[in-house]
Length: 126
Image (cartoon, rainbow, N blue to C red):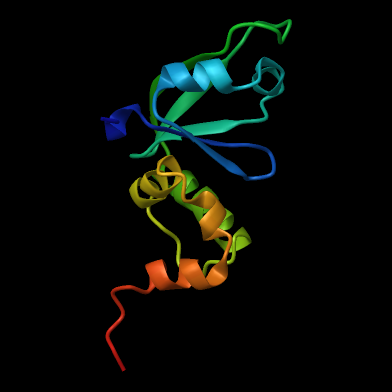
């Protein structure tokens, strides 16, 4: 089971989002060159900032460290931008975003009709 405190949301320069279910998985999958060039911004679901580090040569290993800094506002701003780029008028919370992306729902989220159905499932009937 994935614990929410272990999940890392990583945004690249284009504000695309990658979700990793642990710091270790993020370290294994992120490109050292991208980390070296500060191409990523990373957060836990509660908005804690995650520092991504690598060697100056930009070729080896990536290290992900939780910091004591919190920036929930910036995480929410990035998520709003991400969801609007993908055709949503509603911004999902970090927790809901993580749940969907870890479940592999992103390809279906690009279809507006499916997205509209899940985002408005609790709307009152007319």
